[in-house]
Length: 423
View 1 (cartoon, helix red, strand yellow):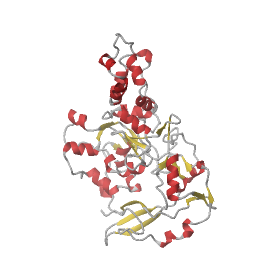
View 2 (spheres, rainbow, N blue to C red; view 1 turned 180 degrees about the vertical axis):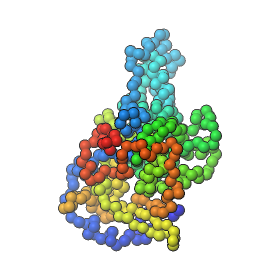
View 3 (cartoon, rainbow, N blue to C red; view 1 turned 30 degrees about the vertical axis):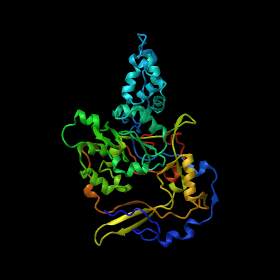
View 4 (cartoon, rainbow, N blue to C red; view 1 turned 135 degrees about the vertical axis):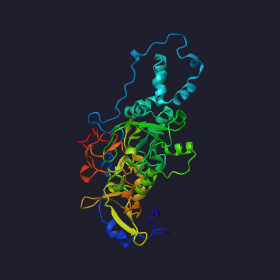
């Protein structure tokens, strides 16, 4: 498949930007500069049901708070060496050792006695993870124990996507990676892979990062997953199998649908369901406030009007559909510091007479998506584990509509209660 990725004027693979998009009347209209940060940027949730989002009845497969065993229920030390041989290990080295333990092993160590509990509770990595109970609960429930708590805490404290260095607002739990929504959405490595070649062995579980996905509501449409599923980190499983060919049907379908928002949200297939059930929304840990906070959408980019173009690849064949962006990706969120860099790239924000918002820079002319417009249906296929009928009534939007831009949300960027009726 030919994929056109840019629309720069000096690009050899794309035609020049049409004159109607370079007309200064489009981007050069006067407006009042927006100097108030709360007007230029806003917090809002990304659409779709991720792991643990739904609070309706028993539809949430994880809890929002994992109960830690209280001190009074943990035995007191019974000897002069309450942690055995570890008593002779320097504290700094002991902390390093504890950071390499997975969450479940560390919690088991915490319950040995009250001395062990104190060691764990004073561990900075544990304090970070415990401050995000939804994340702690998700890791334990999905049994994603291929990494230590130090790595998990680092992903929670970090603000950058592991792929592109923009703000990462998703946490991919199989490998504890922070990702921005566009990378999470488009990079095939984060589409979990089923094991299709015989029985799952203990060696496979020990060597390949994986997650046990639980029944619940997931995806852009809130489809119902009926039975538990075991999913593996795609690159790690291929390496373990010594397989360079990733051409199984689910990847072929994903490749054809890659990047096309409307098609990939079709309730007849479970591509995005598989991605949502091993991912949680991930506000980042702010050292200043000692709390988890979410990023900000740019009001100009989030409300820009899309312009669609079609181009025929071959006679009597298929069309490519592109969404032409005027400025930045409308699905991307920023920290306050990152928002400043965004303004330096696209110009300050102005409010026009008609109430719309815009950047002062000339439109970038870049495409957000390219995809086949015809030929999708053969690659759709409902899974036996997915029930498309019994699901909450959610839509397939990602960014909020204009009338939702001023909706009060939690500091982490999500609505406080996410249920079938409120989303």
